Length: 371
Image (cartoon, rainbow, N blue to C red; front, top):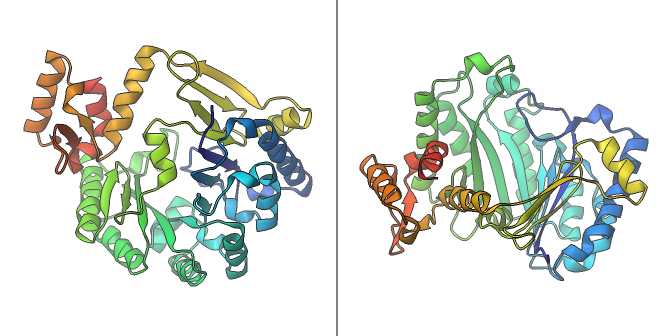
């Protein structure tokens, strides 16, 4: 394959959040020796996988973890094998926590080519931040946003959580007002999900309250100039996340780092997916012995491909063509979903259907129904 999108996973955090399912380790694991080994392994994987990338990258996304813990020089070092593929037109995103933002580092990141920042704010309520285990305060988050925009980075996204125990729509509105007082271009709002073993699991709000939160955020942001273009994502017109759209459109992507997943839609019969080892130590050990870090791979079946086609299309406000309703059962289900206010004709494209805001909030159930 010749992927035009690249993801790099930096697995170390300032502090591991109790609700996070992504593979990451607390900063206490980032010793000098382990850090050195990780960067050498990541650069080795970049050399190994570079032939799978197109000559020019459309998007590059450095996630984690807390990638903003890396210095620009460290980022430049691991990207050396593919530096010539990063162009001025490449959408280059780096995730950051508010407490890891500094003016000097941001200036060097801009010189390196990073032109989009995704900041994990989650909430601007002190009590909710403490409950979530976040190490920043509302004041630190707002100060970090000021620093980011002062640095000249224009394409800024923020993350927000809803459905948090004790959270109200008034809390959400206060956070949304404060965040959109800045010229942010994108906002991701995720429903807090916890495993049954999490101490807060029994305190999660009811499904009706969760739905109320999701629909409130949709109404508020769309009334303030954002388009709700994906289940959890809102953007000002022209500022959708190109990297994530590449995933949702089913295009090829390459991912480097521990636990990273890659996808080649042209591999095998119906596409091929593979994943790296989720242990930093195993990942480093393999690559520093000139071995692949890959843990497993799978060739998709026609059935899996069909399921993913529906799953991806129903995530997006662009929806799907009416021609996909190719059985009497699907036609009946679509008619029932429209009657219930969950599915609607696309507002501007003929012969397409799209989920309503309520439908997007209940998308998991709808997807399983249609599939």
